[in-house]
Image (tube, rainbow, N blue to C red; front, side, top):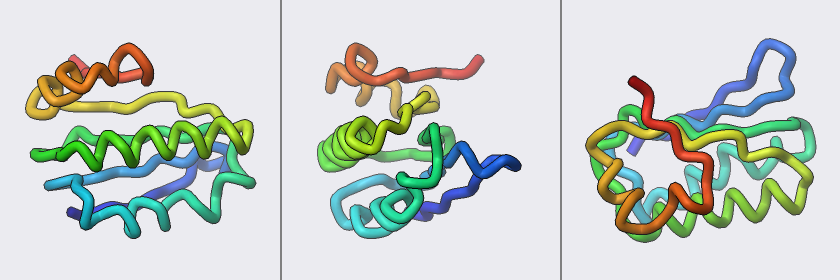
Amino acid sequence: MAVYSNRSDDNQHLTISVTDSFQYSDRSGFLKCYEDSMDEVSGVSVDLREAVYLDSAACGMLLVLRDRAKNCKVELREIIINEEVKEFFDTMGLPSILNVILPD
């Protein structure tokens, strides 16, 4: 997995991008992307358009992010996915609890 984050020009929005696989062994890298920024931003998004594999731990990491954002009064705006991971998201029921977007 490659995980990286960037901020919007006004520094108020954090985007976390994940490429390749997103699984349990990636938890510390994913956490590092947002843990120091939550007190400084008003919104966060996760971009999974380049992800090809997710395991159930990835689901857990997204839910932890959601809870952390809520506790910090930060809006988890969207989880952007691709066709490859759509079935996983649907099976896990994530579209019913997260704002999941599949771009055209």
